[in-house]
Image (cartoon, rainbow, N blue to C red; front, top):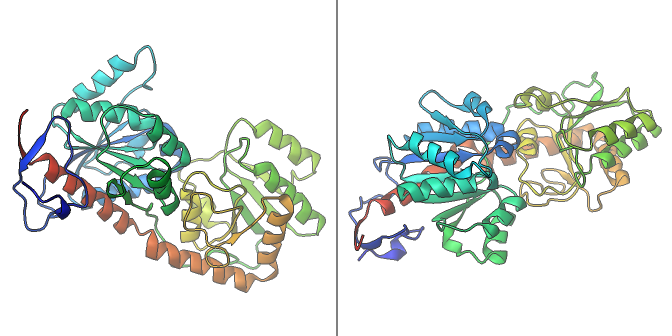
Amino acid sequence: MANRSFWPLPLTGPGRAVVIALMPEEPQSRSTPVHAVLCIDRETLVRSRGVLRHLLVGLVDQAIQVRVVSDDARVDTLLPGPVQAVLHPPIAWPFSRRRIERVVADLAATEPTVVHAIGGGSYRVANAIARAFDAELILQVISLADCDAVERRSGTPAACLLAASTPLAGVLIDRLRIDRDRVRLVRPGVLASSDTNCFANPDRTTTILSTSMLRRGAGVERLVEAMAILKHRDYDLLLFLMGKGARESAIRRVIRDRKLSSCVTLSRPAGNMSEAIHSADIFVLPAAPSTVSANSLHAMGAGVAIVACGEGVCDHLHDAETAIVCEDATAETIADSIERLIADPNEARRLAGAGRDYVKQHHAVSKMAEATADAYRQLALAHATFSIGE
């Protein structure tokens, strides 16, 4: 019988009793055939667009055969040449079963060995695909909402859970009581610039960017109030709000009431926001993030200074090291933190450069792709073991 201590992941699979395995000397060899299906829901596509594209390109480079299942046609814009998409309408009653059956039929030509759900909105369809093909199931957790979805879900046990940060891994292990050997830390990968963009042009008006959603609890009104404080202190600044949500009308009223229309602009997000991020001097997270913020990572990688109201579930926000982290989430503390950066542009550029270096070290695209591919290959080996009793 195979020695379980040899495996960082348990040998699991519905209906299989593992008796003997033929395994190569190196269990993570590229020679292990892997047919992976990635399930990506609409919300995950919006919040992690750039990271997803890097992941797909990296998996192709790792010789993983990949197909993508999504309920959003925009996923087509992320796909490298060899990757195909299977699109489906939202999986919702009363059409859920029929739509899932159609997805399974579209995938049947090449049965997957691994099904990888990225974000809680894709867990249901991924579970159905894994059950239909007796494939190994991976759940990726990017937010506290995803942890809640893991806790609520039923069906095929996940062979592996990928956590996007140390705090999220802690929630899975400590709160949800998931075995530590089933949880892997795979941080999002982003590209890092060779330049520090923060205050790179001293003749330009200081530009502040927020991509937080315009909804309750996101802190965007607080950021607008901070701009009013800074305007009262005679600072000439531009703030671009590039989120969207139900609070947009209310936030527009605050902007008008505070007479900030000339310096605060609401702009609907388009594309991957890369150009906007690279044009900013300061990026603000006006509330403690409950999701690992891909945009703050992109900003750090671009050499933009970060102001955050708490670390939340992120492990890349370190006060005075990679960002200014406000202890109290108030308009006054946000304003003071922004003023601190403006008052000492050299220190702001040092902080932005340190954040960029942190991204290079801990959030490299190659590391994300390699760690994900390694999980696939180990599960594919478990899937390929001989068994009896079926």
